[in-house]
Length: 436
Ligand code: URA
Image 1 (cartoon, rainbow, N blue to C red):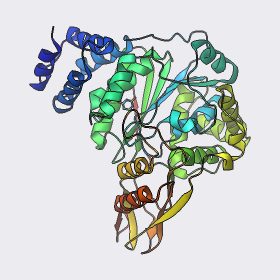
Image 2 (cartoon, rainbow, N blue to C red):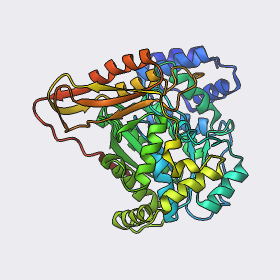
Image 3 (tube, protein in one colour):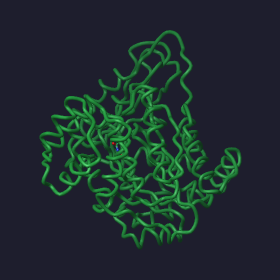
């Protein structure tokens, strides 16, 4: 078998066999298939697509490229949660302590930022000393003792996905449905949880921009999870504007803590509750949505969810005092305002451009080797449906470099679509997909 022939086959739109997919992933993992051939293949997949069978084969080949974690030493139904990636998506930071405080064990794998979207690990590194490099022993111990652990994708967990994900990130081949579905599900299936809740983003800031594509992606992932014997639910959530008001690592941590204190943004809180309810139901900790919501409200009101975040940060080496004193979080040196050129209602905020503006400020990675500035970001002052007058502030930029801030300012201004007529914004939770 030759990788050259497989690329040529996919370029013509033919289906790869199970053996061919296994050969390709094995060769890419051991380095015998170089990055340039794999990049050509992923680009061919972007143009030609993959069948459902090919997608399942790719998922299982990537899952089997490394260890499949055994979490049987953790009592109870372990639920994992994963987002397909969004702008301002700090959901895991608030959701996991809430769910753990209610009593469902959270054993989660997280990633770093990808393209214009942020990543949970980068955000958690705002707590000095925090690490997601946990041994399996510590991971299991932390979930058993405090109910929550978040690990990075270790070198041994779906290593083929890790390598492919980094390659896709810098070759404009992220936004392909089968590649996203297999990437996410290979990690989820390798990470040993019993049940999976997927947050599938839809709209301009998502990798899947069309609602119908997001539904198809969600259905594909739910069917892969179910086929592999895991209870899987997907929630499709809106990304036609950033989630919440804060975009950028430390600003998002601050907003997540606000949410744990009960005063988070409405749209963000709703996404947290919708996903949290599904996690609690799958874990057998809530009878139904109403019961789950009542329990989540209770752990926010009595402070135990915020305390759980602090316990979790401390257990993973981070400075938990930051949870109780948000002024300690990294702050950018300068701020500047983005003002509106017109009067009217905000129809849409091109979330992808807001994500790119944040990257421009230094808050995201341009290449897989780039470092990031945790302090920079954007605070939105107007969201979809809001009225804005000419000259009024649309957003505030927090940065450390005047030239970068000026470039971001123009991008953010152009990201706001303002019209005379008001359009009712889409609900943030668009649809649930359950396994059949
Ligand atoms: N998140 C992932 O884990 N993989 C993708 O391909 C996209 C988002």
